[in-house]
Image 1 (cartoon, rainbow, N blue to C red):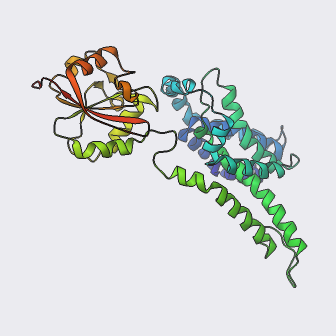
Image 2: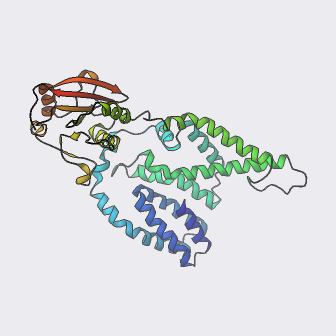
Image 3: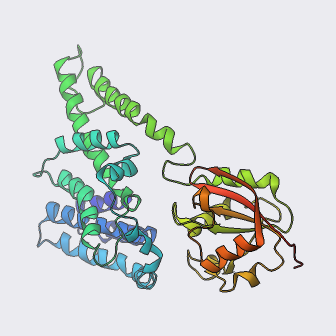
Length: 364
């Protein structure tokens, strides 16, 4: 939003470099916030050309300031290119359906459909600013989709910055409807209504539309504020199951291959147990992810050596109840089956918590 407003201000006085400097800083901030957000520059190009013409000095100034704002982002791009494996999992998750995409972007599929329908009604390609809003809404997803063969970043939450464009276009439709409604029922002695600031029917249309959106979106709002989300493992409850049963010297391990598996569970449980004194040691980790600047931890090659001296171990896994040791390294699964006994197990959404006790206790 800030970048769009600053660009509009600069285009109002394209000869003033004081107007362009804040826009350049906004470009830098956009790139530093998230590299995918840089795709909004395609929409900014549409706005600059629409308002000033392809060969104007304003477009030249836009190109120069965009390039200047992008220079501080270049090191981040270079470093990011070396770490594309951190988002390699996106390509393995399958494509999001339209329903999933709309639900993730708008919080509710029906809210998304209503906002998009209102937005489409307001499209006027002859009007530069509405053309810009349409480009803002559509070009970033198109650009990310086009880059998919090179690097898959097609994840709905990466494109949340397109929501303001859809909402502003929808607001244009509501403004038109409210103005027409106010014109149909004139107020005695009042000036002709201009926008949503009109009296009576204008406010009624706006408030009715907001009420409908709020009502349709209420289930999604409740779901978003109820932990866990429908597609997430309930690690908070898993931690609550463990806390009253923890003893000094306990260890923890992770398994399974769904709901993000060990990588997600390890980070989630570390957060949920952050306030627990003497939280269980992550026994099969040789190097923590944060110590190597990665989401992935390096796990030890010799599970027996890593688990030496561990007599109580908590297993947090998304594996099925019939085989809690499924989907983990073979040597580790054999160690846990052969030397430990499961004395407690409880499952919550997407995750099982089991307490394993060594059959023949060993000294650390």
